[in-house]
Image (cartoon, rainbow, N blue to C red; front, side):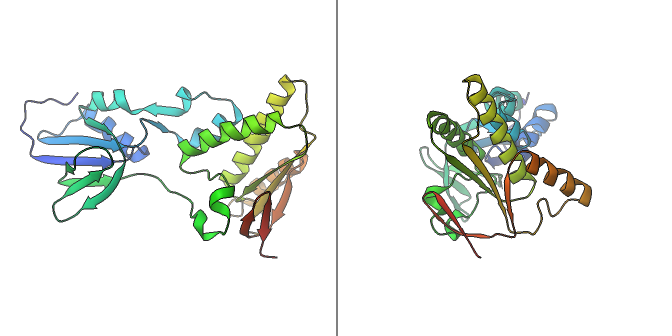
Length: 244
């Protein structure tokens, strides 16, 4: 753990609890830098491991298994932890503006807050789709969507936009989870139709032919309707509109 016997010479502030900052905290815990005060500012105290998201959605993992608790990690690293949202940077005075606390001084700042899909570029998407990122928001939306689907008795259409590895994984994970949940209730998913939309002419276009062929077969066996070469240009309640 970081010692406090050295005067603070530099303030290193980490914004966001992403994977890179988790690694920094771990390194500071093992090899602290004398005179460097480490601070983490993050909106969420539990950071999800994105590689385990499909398994979490499928029900293979629980919340604790797929998340890193930043509190103990910060204590181990001797870092200050501020549970807050950053709303601005003052580059002249080298301070960070937060939503709920006074400004935080920095000498060096690192930002690792993850990516966010640009849903505003697709008309209607902002209010009618569930973006996979930020992951914490997706998880809460997914739990709500799962409950709504299980409560319905009529036909349900589920569409995933994006035919890369992430889109394929999420769709298959969602299908698996729904089938298991329905099976426990003595039901089937015969009234659920799954769609996968992709701009490229093939699913998993960046992967080698054997991988593409294997997953094309899996998707067909799972009854997924693959709409390759279909770019979604607009979203309406209950509908996706493609370019052709």
